[in-house]
Length: 349
Image (cartoon, rainbow, N blue to C red):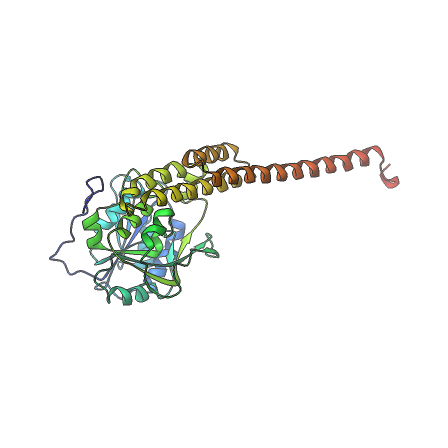
């Protein structure tokens, strides 16, 4: 049932010929990564009748991506510029509204797909009419495209994930680059929630998992790019993700099985708090002390369980130990310099 708090997605125009795929590429001020993204899709392009490809620019203010789109793809890729900035959830909803395909893939303009992504998922999607979404394992890469990590392995072989609602209810496990959603699912459940700045995808995947079976492909066929210019990185500098995670956990609680909702939400708060403490430690090591304080404070607001408090003490001890070692090395260097100045070598006199 459609939640009135979620933006309504109108049905696709029935009179139009509909492709199987709609690859919708939301873009904002990141033109330097756009070529890699587009070429990864175009390398798997089955033609306009089978795949809609469109870049939806959220009124970029630092560059104009349209010339780059035309240089790379000519007229094969359509381009749309928002009259005014909508923000991340709003632009994603616009992508869904503009999609014409039966299956929608929201692929950020700094992420990319690997060979076989569309064909491998299509084989499963054509065999099951009840599926609401499908996703593959994904890589985390740096801006040069080098792999840094892999997402959790949900199962060894391809298939549906019966217990996925509980897993996704505890933590965000799927990036947009790896997920495709049946368009009529968006039409039934609504779009991404505007009040969530960091976690609109997490809330959406949880909402879908509560209503539909979800297919999983264990091969890593998509890549999520981590770099300093991303929207996620900007929020990280400010330490603003944790309140958003807390809000998402509360929104998702009604989607969960009633007899397990309290336990799953509690685990989710613990995981969010532990993640916040990890970010606090990393911020201290980077010298971002204000961000570290915000992360620690928001982590404890999210959960003050014994596990979280123990982790806080361990992180504090580790940072104190590291600080002691750095201070000791500085004292030793100063001591050597003092002795050298006091007792210079014969050839230095």
